[in-house]
Image (cartoon, rainbow, N blue to C red; front, side, top):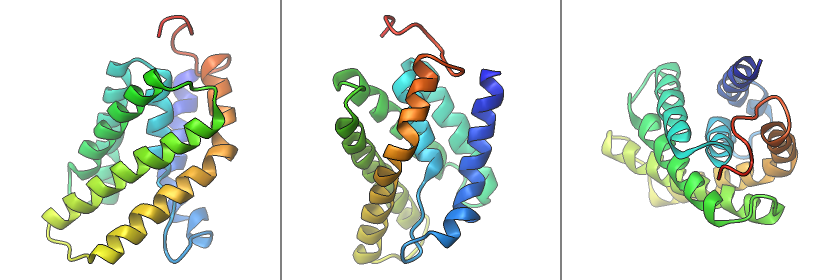
Amino acid sequence: MRYVLIAVMFFLSLILPGTLFHFWSWSGIKPDLLMLLTMYIAMHHRLRSGLIWGLVAGFLEDLYLGRYIGMYTLTLVVVAFLSYWLAERWYRENFLLTTFMVFIVTSVGQLLVAFLSLGAGLHWTLGDIGRLVIGVSLYNAILVPLTYPLIHQSFVRGWLRYRPRYER
């Protein structure tokens, strides 16, 4: 059941930004739900599992978007590593630290996407990159109060438990 639930969350994180969040976008900026899900999985699993999730999810997102194969693959692997590293050093139960961590990791991920896009030949100005990075990071941070308590409880006590809590 755990894998079915994770697969459903994966597909929703691919589909919702183009459908539901299209209507809730701020100046065309939408949340990066797959990046948010990757952070949550990396925070609650071992490093290897988080990196494999980032690799597979990023590759599938690259295929779904149909352009620049490898851009989201590399980005989500970096996001998974950074999320795991910060979660090992910060107290996960602290809601404000988690929100700040999501903001920081999303900023790093979006900066990486922007610079990889520049390397692929897209012509963005620094203002566009700044607006994108800050906008998506704020949007993901705002979604933490709505998503993190449910996901955290599911990983710790419920359907998505992967390992006992004492095995950190």
